[in-house]
Length: 137
Length: 137
DNA sequence: CTGATTTCGACAATCATTCTCATAAGGCCT
DNA sequence: AGGCCTTATGAGAATGATTGTCGAAATCAG
Ligand SMILES: [Zn+2]
Ligand SMILES: [Zn+2]
Ligand SMILES: [Zn+2]
Ligand SMILES: [Zn+2]
Image (cartoon, rainbow over all chains, first blue to last red; front, side, top):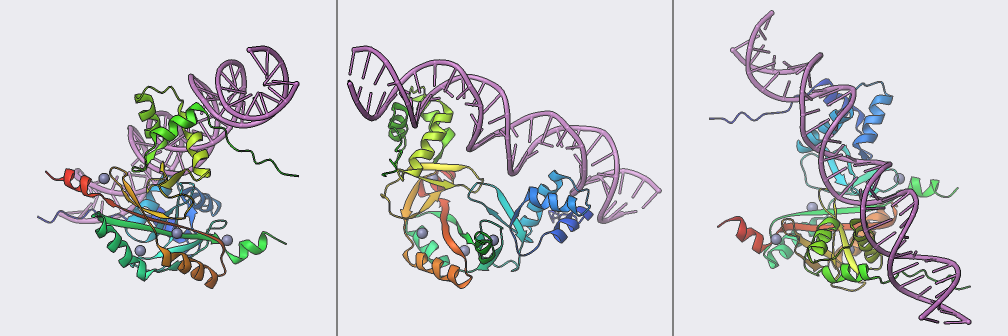
C-alpha cells in the first residue's frame, strides 16, 4: 500500500552542489556551475539545474526569481521555517527576515476577496554595504 | 538647458495595445498579442513587447514577474500610487491592495542591515472564486 | 553480483524575450 | 501640403535561460 516515496539519491554531484553552495549569496544555476567547474568538478550544467531544483524541493536550498526572471539559489539557513530575504541585487548577498504581521495580513486580504490556495512572495532587494562602498571609491 | 524629455509617441499600435488591455487580468505579452491579432489587429509581436514595456515605464500598465519567470501585464487601475496585487494564478484576475505598514517595515529592516536603494516585491497569488468553482463541478 | 531504477552528461530543443535593419509613421517646421 | 529628422514598426534572426533526449554510468535491493 505504501506508495514508496521515491526519495532522491544523494550522489557525488548532489554533494558537490551542496558543498559549493553557501548560505550567504544567491546565485544562478549557471553561476554555481561555473564555480563548480572552476574548482575542478566535472559536473554537467543540466545536472546542476536538476540538482538545485531537487534540493529546493527538499527545502535544502532557497530559490527566488530575480527581477529579470532568472532563478537564484542559495543554501537555506533556516530549516523548514517559512521566511523571506533582503537581498543585494549586485552581489546576491542576502539575510533572512521574517514578516510575522504580514503572514496574517495575507490571509485576511485573500479571504476578503474569496481567493483560496494563497501563497505569497515578499522580496526586499537593495545594495549591500560592501557593494555600495565599492560603487564609489 | 531643458533636456527635452524624449516622450514616447502615441502610435496606432500603442493605442491598440492600451485598448485591448483591461484593468482586470494580468496576461503575458504573447497573450495580449494573440488577442490583438484575434481582433483583427496586424500589430507585430515585438511591437507588443516594446509597447508594453514603454507603457509600464510610464506607469500606464502594471508589470509583474510570475513564478515561472514570465512578465505579466495589465492596465493599472490606480494612478502613480504604489501598490501591490492579489492575483489569480489560473486566470490572471487581480485586485489591487496596499500594505501600508509594510512600506515602513521594509525601510526599517533595510536600514538595520545597512542596505540602500531598497525596492520590494509583494505578490499574493491564489485561485479566484470563479476558477475555484470551475475547478470542481 | 544482478537486475531495476535513478541520475549523469553532452547536446539538441524550447520558449520568452531581444536585436537587426530596412521601411513606415509621427512631429514639427515652412 | 511638402520636406526633414527622429522614433516606431515588423519580419525574422539571434540570444539566453531552462528543459528534454537518450545512451552510459551510478546507486540500491535482494
Ligand atoms: Zn552586495
Ligand atoms: Zn511569508
Ligand atoms: Zn481565476
Ligand atoms: Zn509596497
